[in-house]
Structures are given as structure tokens and as C-alpha cells.
Image (cartoon, rainbow, N blue to C red; front, side, top):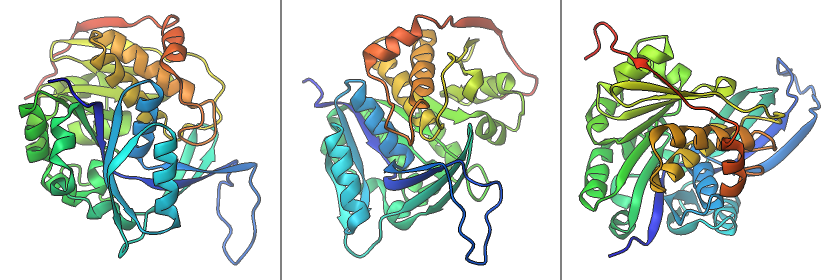
Length: 324
């Protein structure tokens, strides 16, 4: 029986207000500070990733929660308009949709978030038919969704039993505890997405090359996103690196989520790891050309064209001392 969806994305969905040219310090005392530009757009790591996957041509479904408010309606409308199936999104009239303000300065940003109903999502709320009908299940924002994290192993086991792949993007841990049940979930994670800071925090190793080897020894394929420096992955034996193409950066909001979509698109197309990595880097880099997380997400044709200029490099076998 063929799958209904290529990808099921589970996780957070909330509007982003992205302000460009934010001041280095905010002035309180009711002082008004002007910025260069702003956008109201799709936010939430999972929602941005789902939009990127649909843009690449993947049959994409989303499972999550929004409130029964204007912000929730905005997210449902935007996801649907961008080709994402939202039949698995619950609407809670008793809860508010989360909101994020991203203050962007060049390639850096400060993020202030009201979680709203983000942490109300549980694994039991995800429709079994969506899980069994997908080729791959991806979860974002692990540390923002403690209730989902508690049942994530079971969700991923069900996905694997149905023949689907699994992936997890940790995103930042506001409590900076860096476990929260992660050690229990990792054995059923096929691909683990982290950025350089997250990789260091979870592995205990600052060097991303060694951190990748440490994480690979724990089970998943670790994929470490390094911004303008590209990305690397470790298959448990060998390291692969890809440099990023030169692009004119408007902001980097959502670039990592769009990277995830590109990498998984390659994986679903049957690409080897190095080519998946190159496609992810191309997608993430191209998405930084526009304001907000979804405005400049590339098509597969655009991303493939960008991949032509990238040369994946196979590294030496890396086996760090003390790696499990």
C-alpha cells in the first residue's frame, strides 16, 4: 500500500513577527525605537519546516495545536495556502496560540516567545492514520514540548513499525538541561538535527567534528548545521562536510528548518548522505534571501541548481577518545 504523505511534521506552529535592524539594546520607559523592516509570517520550527517540504514538492502533513483565536486561524490559513495538509491540527478554544518576536540584526537574532498552546501537544493527539500513512515522521522543538517528548519514543516506534523513517530537531533548550528524555528517544531516531551550539551542549564536546562522532555513537545519524560554514554529518564511521554557497542574507529566521526539509527531501529521493547534506545546505542558504522563515524557501529545481556549486567532502574516520 502506498503512503498518503511523504512527510508528517509534528510540533509547534505560531506566528512570527520578524523585525529587521533591531537595536542592540531595547529602550524601556515607553521609548519608541524604529527598525528597518518587519514581517508577520509563519513561525514555529515545525511549521516552517513543513512549508519548506511542501515547497520542495513533498506531500506534507502537519500535526500540532493552535488556539481558537486570530493567530491560530492565521497559521491554519498560511499552512494550507502553502500546500500543507492541516487535517491533523487540533484547535483549542481554551488556549492561546503561541507568538514569537524575532529581533534580527544581520545574520544573528534574538528570539522572544510566548509558548501558548505549544506545550499542550501530546503524542496521543497525533492521528494514528497520519503516522501509518507517512513515509517519514519529523518532530521539531523537542525541548519546548515536554508533553510531546514524554510520548515521543512510542510515536517514533509506531512510525518505524509502519515502515517510516524518523527525525528530530532539538532546537534550543531554554532550561539548558539538555536531556529531558532525549537519551530514551535517541535509539529510535534515524536523523538528529542540531546546530553547532546544540551539538556541543548535548554531546559535551565543543568541536563539532568530534561532537558528531559522539552523537553518532549514540545511534542516530547526526547532522550539524553550522550556518555560513555549511554543515556536516557523521554516519558512525565517516564524516561528510558541505560548505555553504554565497548568498545575500536578509535574515536567517527559519534557515535551519528549511535545511531540515532539504536534507529529508534528499533522503526520501534516495540520495546518499553527502548529497542530502548538500541539498539541505542549499535550501537553508537560499531561504536566508528573504524576510521571515518562509518567504524565500526554494523549489526543488532552485535547490538542485544551487547544489551544483557545492562539493561535499568525505572526511577521515573520526573516533574520539571516550566516545561511547
